[in-house]
Image (cartoon, rainbow, N blue to C red; front, side):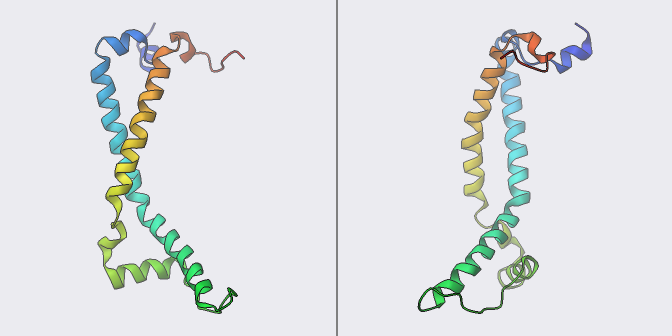
Amino acid sequence: MSEQEKQLSLPTETDANVGGAKVLVTKLVLSAAAASVAETATFPLDLFKTRLQLQGEVALSKSPHGEAVATKQKGLFSIARGIVVDEGFFKLWKGLSPALYRHFSKYYFLFLQNFQILTSLPPHTAYDYHMPV
C-alpha cells in the first residue's frame, strides 16, 4: 500500500486499538471546534429568521378575529439593523451557549457512532466506491 493510499484509507480495527484513542480524541475535538465555528457564524441568521417569523405572528395576534392586519413588514436587513442599533452588536449572539451545548451533545454521539461504523468496515471498502446490495 503506497503512502497516498494509506492517507486516503478509512480507519481500521488496528488503528482504533493502537493509538486510536488519540486519533479519536483529536478528531472529536476538531469536529467540536468546527461545529462551534459553524454555529457561531450562522447563529445571527437563525435569529433573523425567528424575528421574521415572529413579525407575522404578532400581526395576526393584533387582529380581533384572526384576520391579517395591514402592518409594515420589515425585511431581513432592517431587522438586522434594528437589532444592532436597539440592542447592541453582541446581542446577535445572545443565546449561543445553549445552541453550542446542543451541538456538542448531539454530535458527540453521532461522531462516535460513525467512527464505530467506519472502524468495523473492511479496509478495502475505502477504494470501492460502491457497496454490494
